[in-house]
Amino acid sequence: MQKVNPLLLRDLKAFSGIELPVLETMLATSKSAFYAKGETFFREGEVAARFFVMLDGFLHVVRTTPAGEQVIMRHFGTGEIFGMAPAIGRDTYPATSVAISDCVALSWPMKYWQEFCEITPQFQKNALSAVGERLQGSQDRIVEMATERVENRVAKALVRLVEQAGKPTPQGTLIDVAVTRQDIAEMTGTTLHTVSRIFSAWSSKGIVEVGRKKIEVLSSSRLSDIAGEQV
Amino acid sequence: MQKVNPLLLRDLKAFSGIELPVLETMLATSKSAFYAKGETFFREGEVAARFFVMLDGFLHVVRTTPAGEQVIMRHFGTGEIFGMAPAIGRDTYPATSVAISDCVALSWPMKYWQEFCEITPQFQKNALSAVGERLQGSQDRIVEMATERVENRVAKALVRLVEQAGKPTPQGTLIDVAVTRQDIAEMTGTTLHTVSRIFSAWSSKGIVEVGRKKIEVLSSSRLSDIAGEQV
DNA sequence: GTCATAATTTGCTACAGATCAAAGTCGAGA
DNA sequence: TCTCGACTTTGATCTGTAGCAAATTATGAC
Image: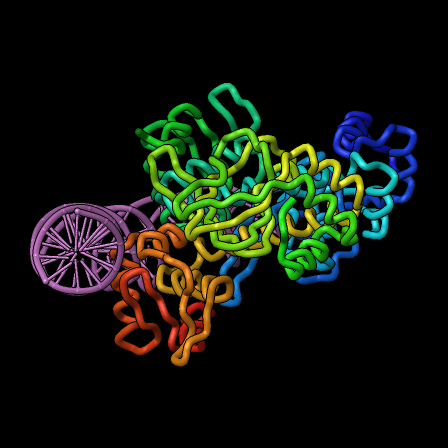
């Protein structure tokens, strides 16, 4: 059993609806492991053997087309549950997840999923609404891809990154995780060239300050204007 | 209580895992209604009062952007359950659903959702994997929108329509529901003009035969070639 | 500190697909 | 049968973004 940050324990409790003593038993069955930046937790198509909770770090979930193109589906950060294939009635992982920073994550063999669901109805119920939120998010992105042009999509992606990994600074908000232009291109369905041009433009307007693997949002309101529907 | 096609009853049983006697009790609480082509079952943002099973007909689920553009998210046909907002932990409908043919559908007040879940664990479990499949489908579409060009996306949309509403004919397969060029544009994130041009091109290649609100696939293999990754 | 590598920027060109405009066609209802 | 309106087709033009190429700059390894 691992020593776990009590705050996280509370998060887990909130998600699972499980009382702390039970939760501690759960933790007894868990494995905690370190994943270096760039390592994969699991790959698309693999038999789903374990489900995870991120204790610290960031990962992104990516799908690869037959032609070899990558699409970044989403990010997960501290406290979030991922790899819960059985929650959507699957026995293989639907996508690959890659650590984009050094990570520590708990994981359980999949057999406990059923068990946790049975022990605590709230667990299953919460898993359900987590899946629901993800469905919602996916559909939002379809609408986005169908109706918005690249600059808006990049702005939206940046807003999401700020929400998930934003760190306040004197001048604005820093995206506190290494994200390349290529990554942002893969999040928005464009090319790294176009992302670079957009950043240059925003930079000269004072909306962001960008560098090598560094993105700082100086005017989040102006960024939101671009992201939102500009009447 | 409605007289219900025994075949459908079996479909319902398969979904819900409920034994027939219980199912018939369920049906006793249901309301069956007719919806004319063009009518809406429910609108985006409305409080989710009822969930539905389509007895006969087709609908499409559509989201509207603040700018007024429409995106068709998916279609539902006979035997499918829709409007199950609580299954994704929501109390409002996330999209609008519109009958695209005359329809007959059963519906239940939402309070029965909980009840059905409690009576039959299988019901909740199946709802879960239905949501999972939809999540999967949504993510596939994101990848599609991010990596494929219009012609491929239109081909994919047509393949899906054939699967859901295809009716075999001597020469091929007819899409047996009224779908306009505009509809297909809204399914694929393009314009009706582009769809029309693509259809013209396919038509002169003998892949499809198109007319006013009529689409017949003559060579589904060539269509699949276009839809699939053309190495 | 220096080098090697990877990430980024930027200019140029090409084109898929949007947009604008107009004509054609089918079908339902009078 | 005729008419009106909705849907569709097609042409002409414009433009956002991709694709290619090359220069520039940061970063980490040694």
